[in-house]
Image 1 (cartoon, helix red, strand yellow):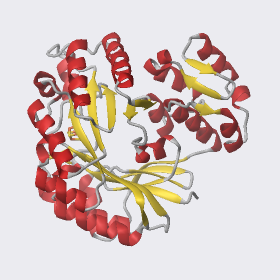
Image 2: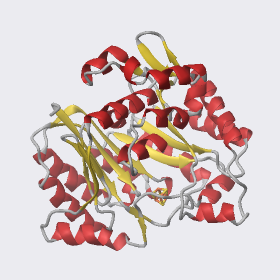
Image 3: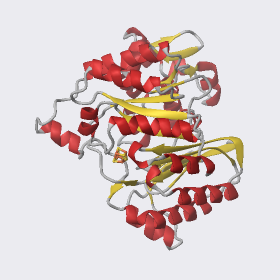
Image 4: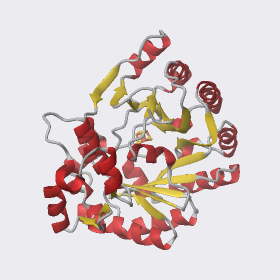
Length: 391
Ligand code: SF4
């Protein structure tokens, strides 16, 4: 067991589903927020494990829809149950049209010290294609409000590869976002998920198909611009000013342990990974009756899976796989176990091995999934690791 643990709290409420959304989120259930926060408080009280909290992350859904008094009260409970240090990173995801100066100051006072704002784009047409509720003006104002409220650690989420988005509209969004001087940027390539409105619209021809070549150009442009602006590209989709790398997400990428609370939340503890039920009704019913929360996708991570997962997650990071550490941690010799894959991927110019680290090349960063699946053990059926590798 590691000396510290992280805590993820899932807030599944949204005003409306975005067209591309495949997260555990519920529209039209805002009336359940008070009950839900009580349920989460109960769940957290059942999951105390005595370790210090490295990070807390309120993700969603739309955590910024929750009235701040509930966040404050939950933070007080968390502090009672888990020791925190001055260094504990506490992030909250916010949507631009749900925050104002007063609530942002209150969030800061409640102990939130990192704000992740879902800008997604600064082009009104693209925001409307994504089905977002905010416009570019509200997005810009949200960041300014966060700054004036006193947040000094702000992440902006942006999406590239949006149907209809050009390289030049992406460049404009990116440059405007950088002008806001965020400490951190997460850039996600749009992916089409089954059952989403976006997929329906593309299949019916109402929206153009996704264009992977254009997305690759947009990604390369982002790498260029953000490097010029002094951001470190520390993970495939994440850039930070020095010292502002997201501690919570680094726990995931470094295979640290985390507790997930709330509906659909994932936990990784004692070599086991599992999700809480993704049914909001079931979660509320069980937690409010003081019962154990039902779980889904329960998986024991075998030594074989653990080492494959470590290889894949390390390759997502800029330093790549530290071979000596990897061999020590997994009692193995990476160059023998993955000899065929490493040789093949080096041949394709997707990875490089400098004798100490194995890392993705710039081309490998563009084609990450082509690299990752080769490290998967041959298994029957899909595992959580298969999802990690192909997302
Ligand atoms: S705000 Fe996020 S979680 Fe909510 S519907 Fe949109 S993409 Fe999904």
